[in-house]
Image 1 (cartoon, rainbow, N blue to C red):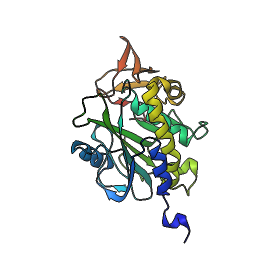
Image 2: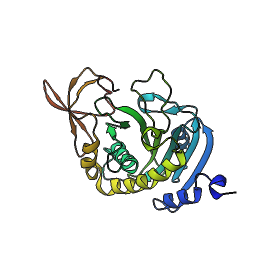
Image 3: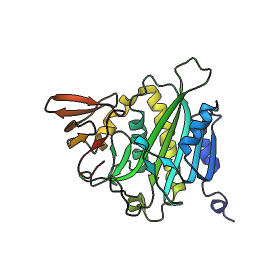
Length: 270
C-alpha cells in the first residue's frame, strides 16, 4: 500500500517541522474533539505546557473571536491549534503576524487575492466585498511556577477548504479550493502553512509585529474603508501601526482601536 494511504498527513515530516520550533514538540491527530484550543488550554491550566500541535478532523465546539462558534465538516476544513511557550518583547500584533505567515504561505504573490482583516481573519478577494476564508484565535496563560515573562500561547487556526453551505454568516464565507483547486486537501494545506507559521513565530519573537507591518499593509482589506465599531464610533480605516493597532480617522480626529474593545463592521464585512 502506498505510504500516502497509510499516513496521508506525513506525520514524520510535520513532527520534524515542529521540532525546529522546539526539539521536544509533539504532534497529535484526533478525529473529533470539542475544541483544540479548549483542550490545550485545559492542559496548560493543569500544568502541561509542552509544545504541541493538536489537529482535529472535526471540532464539535470550535470557537472564534468574541465567543463565536466555528462550524466545519470533516474534510471541508483544516482546524488545528499550536500550543507553544513564547517570550516576545511585546505581544501586540501576534494574531496579525500569524495571519501574515499563513497568507504568505498560501498566496505568496497575491495572485489568489488572499487578504487580511484586522485583527484575526483571512479573506478572499474581491477586497471591496471580501469573503472569509478562515480565522485565528489566540489565548495565553502564565506557566505554573514560572517567574519569567514567558507565556504559553495557544494559537488556533481554522481554514475553510470547501465553501460552507449558506447559513446566517456575518460575512460571506469562501473556501481555499476556489483558488487552489477542487482536490486540495487539509494535509496539503497544513504542509504549506506549518513551516511558515513556525518561522513566523520565531520572527515575531525577534522583531515583534514591526517585522510584519509592511506585509500586513499590502494585504489589509479594511484600509481606506468606512468602518463602524460596536461602541458606536465610526470613521475611515487608516491602517495598522507597528504595534498592530488599527487607526481610525473620525470627525473627532485620528483614534486607535483595540481588539479587545470593539468589533469592526462595514457593509458586507463583519
